[in-house]
Image (tube, rainbow, N blue to C red; front, side):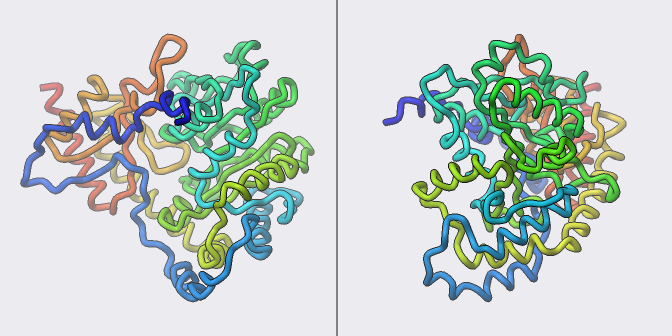
Length: 398
């Protein structure tokens, strides 16, 4: 067996299940889950119909690099969304089966084992980054994202020795779980550091299309490249998904885009990996990337939920609307694990302890004292959950 499997830590939801084990919530209250970031809004009907229309395509093997038309649609979307001069669909775009799979596989393809490999990532973080680093034979380096710094990773705090060993940096903007957006100026600084220290940047942007202001979409890594005149997107790769943008988590569809030389090597890896996107999913994805109307409706639904929930929780918790995404990341008045367990016991609402989403690093666990709430349930359920959470918090001060 691969000995690096022993280095993997329990997944947050495995730890949450153990935390809740033996706890019996009130039977009179229906369970409301705010713990998992699984969109519950309706999938776009026209995308589902396109999927059904092309089921006859299952009789053909798909290409790992995907259909030309799908790559062209993605390149068009990227160019429009991030104000890029151009994206070469043949060399700078690669469809993937969701960003989770691609984020993990990317480290396996690009990390060079045997030379003190280090992979940097935000802390708290999406667990895939750590697992990808460990199974690629690398050491994770955690960049703490603290409230005092706007929940953004501090690139300047990384010591020179860590940069010397670094081969890959994961960033997540908008962030999971914090919702913080990395400004373009800070992305440009990270690109400068990549040039100076010779590492790649993998930017997880799967929440980029869920934002509160229609006139201010979050910036992206490729846009920062373009602002620097780097139209080859050298050292930079972005990951996007239809799961959050289009409420299609079960379709497992996304893409990777950026540096053509890096993507050529990643395509080679994926050819052997055997992970081509099924033809019906490719046709449905093409339709989804070509339409913005359903995404605008999706954002409106999240705006309504944030407004209602924050009105309820604002008076009793340290909580603010995130820059983007669909998570709340409040501070809680007791240990975050106790808060999650006791809230479930009292109100049959599940949230995720923040300490389960981060690691002890540089003297502290930056997720401790927070919980993650995913506002993915229908608006009435979110409002009901917020009312129960407020009732629970008020009992803590009694």
